Image (cartoon, rainbow, N blue to C red; front, side):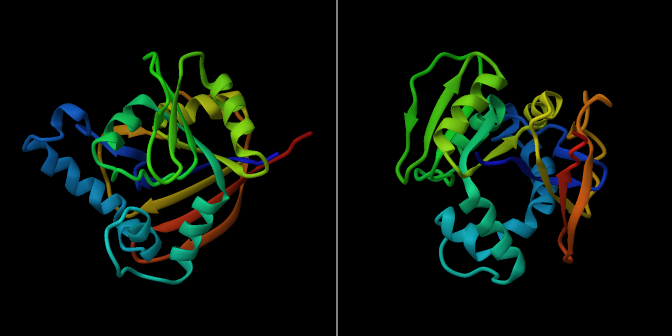
Length: 215
């Protein structure tokens, strides 16, 4: 059975997304304010060759240890889980060939048939909670791993369930001052983690944590 892991970008003050990053602001002047912050947060990934290839941005991009790390993250993933807000934002920004190439389970109250995209991505809409989505993701992933993609509230739900085994965080040197915090609503009963590796780059510090097994 594969592992359950989180792989996300995080601001220096602990936010996954800046204040005002909503669909309502997608085409308004407000976009420029949070869009610039988002670009700083995720600038490291936008430079990587693998990311550019996967999202059909054209040739070019950086190679090296960060690019290899990004490739391994995607190749180890046999299924992903995300929230409705993340899906809605991605649906208007991802290319037609969505960048997952696996089943993706969307936590939502909306009842909807699976949405099949070119390139192997199929979005399944789960109405009966995070545990059900994880069970379905495990069946799809087989021996590969399950990525909890976000947003923050979805990650918090899986931390509370105690099923997250690895945290991969790209900590960017940007301060948001507000937005959606990664570790809000998380209690001291969640599993503890230890540092496994640290990779320093000018754009982000890549931190990898493993769950401490107390049993």
